[in-house]
Length: 212
Ligand SMILES: C[S@@+](CC[C@H](N)C(=O)[O-])C[C@H]1O[C@@H](n2cnc3c(N)ncnc32)[C@H](O)[C@@H]1O
Image (cartoon, rainbow, N blue to C red; front, side, top):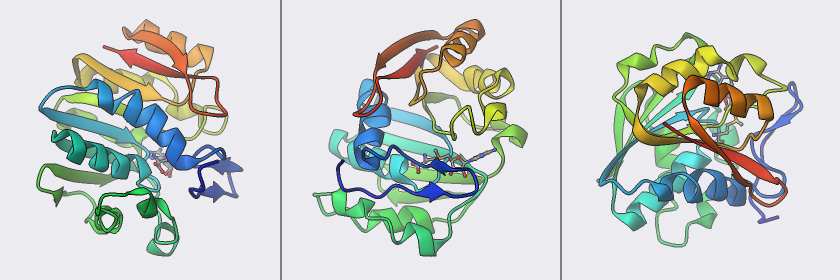
């Protein structure tokens, strides 16, 4: 446990992050195994499920450290209201004076570009990934696939969602997800990804990293 909050969605009986620690999980799956493997000067990131904004916030902090230019695109069907996100304690995990940027990325308008930091722009799309035309996006270097679990949202872990994502990914780009299910791995392979099962964050044995 790292002391960071984890949202729980009662209707779905589902957590937004690991109960072992949201920051720890997000840092491991998306930053360590995803962002830190992208060495280009400019990186386009696509996130499926913006949710609490934690992955976005940690990416912002990591990009400030690495001095990379990031354009972050995030799809979210159910944006969280301010009375929920402003109770989350994620900004207290930033030691380097950027804690105010958690609120800035939440307050950024939906469906347009916002500069959050000189080298970090955010485009949050309020949309259902099942109905979104992602072909309008520029090609991406990194995908954070962070939908609710396949048990809760099987329709999101389907070829019809991953094929369009694959087609807008650059050669050599990667997709990371906390999920390590065999059928998800096989589906990704059948689309053309090279998939690795790698150690997951505390409390989760494995996760997937897929390369195009
Ligand atoms: C596991 S949570 C996301 C966690 C998020 N990345 C974060 O850091 O807090 C899954 C997210 O996917 C969103 N979602 C569910 N169905 C969706 C859909 N059809 N299209 C886009 N987003 C969806 C949920 O509202 C939720 O915010």
